[in-house]
Length: 407
Image (cartoon, rainbow, N blue to C red; front, side):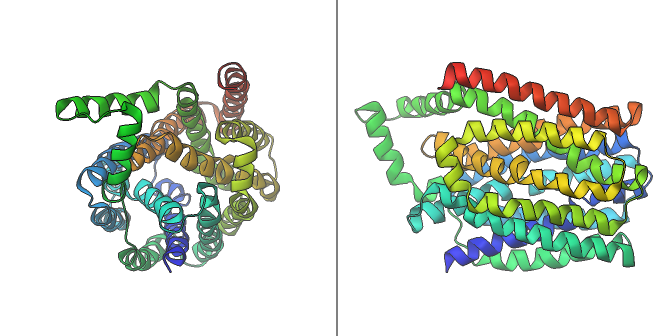
């Protein structure tokens, strides 16, 4: 039964997110904001707020064991903030409320990922690689919601975004209430003690244990070669995703004359590409490894962004969206799995939060602010050309460093 709940949570999570995430740029443009202002809000303020929310919320979840309460509060409070956006005017007010929604909603995704992985691996004894087979239901939710929302936008306008978001979020909250979310503090106390004995060969107490725990966290996350390469890759991937998520719809609609229905279909096409990668992600990760998968994702981003720069007919965007399976579905499964693997005992939620903060926070902020500036100053074609060069250069450098230091 819990495995069905995990699938339902991923499905509803992405249904709700799809109602506002990519379409929200159209709302801000309707409010009269420039590309640069949109980049600052959605690419700068929102991701940085997400960092604060993710790190703070996941730390509290690990420390207090109140993961479920924090996740429920996160979803409910963020939903209220986002729904209120439709009544707000002006750059400053929109920026402040958007930033508040980011902080409030930051904890829920890493807590859900950590809880789902715990349920899959500990409660049911399935391999970590099977995570993608459950995450695929999020892709289904995203694709179904995208096509429906795109069609409804053409019929009823931008207000439908907020009404549909509120309705789906309500169902999401109800399902979440039935799911016994676990954090490391609740589920791994015994494992922590065993791991401590193995690592230290003898039990230590008091301040000595606390200090050693801090060293263990730092050594696991920041002093290992694969982690030192993993975290910068996350930042670049986040920057590339910002160039897609924040500016593609505006580019298609304002420069190429695309309809809202086509915008929805682009998201549905990304879902089609996600399904096989999520389902077979376990096999692919086992064969290739997480870091090589992330490097392939960077190369796919280079192809995708380069294609946008030469696009002249809006409907021709659909074929290239199939690369989304590589740039997000497979790569994000690799990110979640690798973050879980490198996490020290007792810090899995926090490690998921750090990985999410680097991708959706630092990386997305760099891509959103930088992309917004390039878009405003030189146009979307130049922005996508620079994004393609960044992805390709990072892929080449990362491949060289991986071959030299991580093999």
